[in-house]
Image (cartoon, rainbow, N blue to C red; front, side):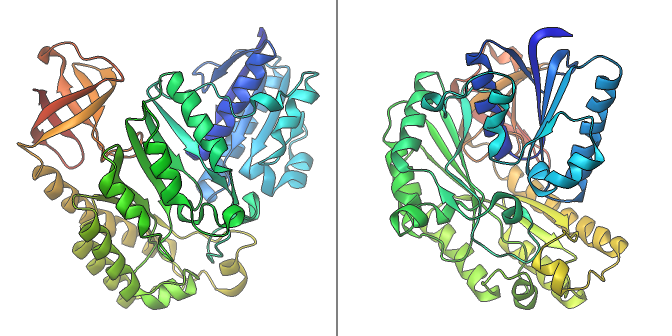
Length: 432
């Protein structure tokens, strides 16, 4: 064990990552050496930031906790703490079931950890972070919680009602991060388009993004986790007019069948969704849309699944993920619907849907051959520099591979390349 060293392990989404980065900074301000997601954790203290979104995420979190409990039993660890969404949802149960953990914190009271370690939490530097991503990009969390009542979703149970951060505070954080070298911002929230309603009485996401875009040094802004109902159309003007606002939108649509959407309590229907996709593409030419879809929700028969396949073929999403429904404790669906679609049917539908999307992705990628595009370089891998276009978010989207033989490229810098080849997901390019 290394004295005064803390290992932090982050599971789940980028919103969790932001919390971990804030905790790392506070620990460092108190004199600790901190590692993040280390391959070989050796600190005397470990903090696990858990995810509790779906069954697989819960299982991963529990397994990670048990792994560190074993390290503690063997004397390779002195103190173990757990925070995050899973801990928030099952605080009492986890404390009884896994007493080896020194303390469980919820989603928001992890700041108490500093006091429990005999240290001080510096409220004046609350939003300072130690960036764990490559230094040229960062995730920017603009709100917590969610006021939507989607039938399948347990996230509001853990995170509570929607709570926007004040706009001036967010803009100050952006200026601070730019001063540290950040050029690219992934703007994240559980529900991006709801931003501002609780503080200002109306949607303010368009104003926030426009003001962010005017900050010197902000090169790219990318938007994640929008909701289709009452989409703020003034945001499209900002995307169209501001060159540093990427023509990219992550908007989870979940399904297309009106009956399934009704069961899901999404408050949109098939016609609304088709019209929204058409308007996004009409008002922001060249926009790349990322979405997430769900198969196997109660009420999805063969007819409804055929509707979903037809929609995917029509929409030709640039980026698409999908997952099979799993019942979550405490949700509206768990209380009011029977999860009666066999798992093998769900998995077969999931595979079929993703096969359709793979063909679409290959087709769309092939159309980019011969185009010149601006990329930012993330890293070196094998014989290639690995970069991304404005249409590619880190970790989840395709990448652009440029041979190192083309000359030296610097991490975090922008270059113009010509696309020379494509596979189902990634692009190959040469430097211009």
